[in-house]
Length: 480
Image (cartoon, rainbow, N blue to C red; front, top):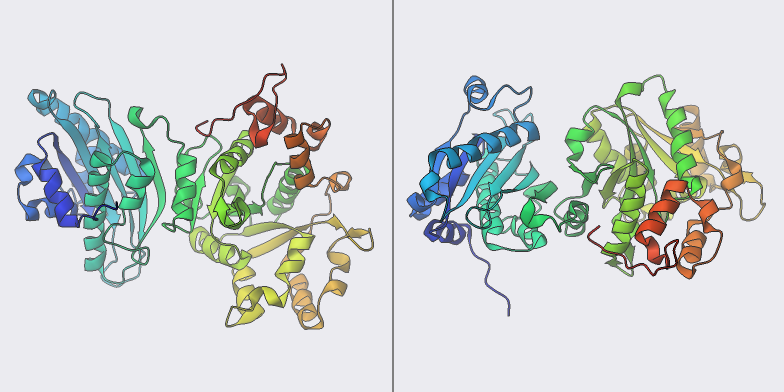
């Protein structure tokens, strides 16, 4: 039986009436609506120890310490550290019966001239039981409303939802999904969600990143080689970005060679700052799903493999390449973007039927795909019919007459480039065949993958690998 979704006011009142929940609100910028929700419903004295809004930068620095940027995660964490420690320092008599919390946000809403993009960081440090260790829940939001008052209202709702979810809901996915109660993804995008602490040690936040995208709260999410959740616009801001999309099931020598060779080409571009390059391996929902369903265990296997190679992972719902480059261009602010594709993928990019549902067809999509400062690096393959090495040199003859001139234009303007130093001795490696060998326990698959990939598969029993080196059966654990 489904339970009725509570309104923002009902959630705030339930928190106020709880005798165990008590804490502080610290809000910077346009986020001053959160605490107001608790005052408006009545009974706030049972919940609120303090509210503060250090709007002036010098006042903020005097309280929380100097910070180069004020709407960033570093500032949010300093706010949480300061406010939570004060609760213990000043309210020792409440420790035995109270679940303390410190709520903080630092928000940039639309300015008077509407020349900026509203966004912000929201965090909660909280106990699930009195005298317990604290947990942290942190999110980054992009605000889509065209009115600053509506953006402030949305932040107020988000804040109440976060506090209610962390205090009354048990499952992290429930907490995450409840954040948009009373809102919609047209108004708010949550592109980073992280929940950590002693009560959430079982949570793999990489899986939460997947669920952000899967459930439509965001079009993209990121995590680093160590599994740390990253906020895309902060990580990629004014960076030169090189992206390899794939299924990585598993990572083979071909995938590694595509990354290494394309990176050498990318570094030699005259408009690329070698010190500001970020290489991304991208997984799309389309490449993660089978029959419309996503196998979370399989996703974590792939994530483990990619992270073991020191790669940063981008999860996205941008199936078409032009949507991906449009997204990245807005973040990188015109910096060089490189996309690595196999030549068969490039052929699909040039097929007009791919863009049948787009009003402007292939021309509209190419304006985004090759617009701004984007370049595609093309990895060769053996041609299925001629069995010759297939590169850009003879790509034109496989195009329709209507797209050949487009191809020539892109070549003339240095938008396409062959990866000429590819290791063609590995082109016979097909990841699906390697995966089948692993699952059947066949001998010899190891030579098709990097040593670190082999070690990770055997140690953790990834991709249904049947036995460890000592012959013992392996049971994979999704929580790893």
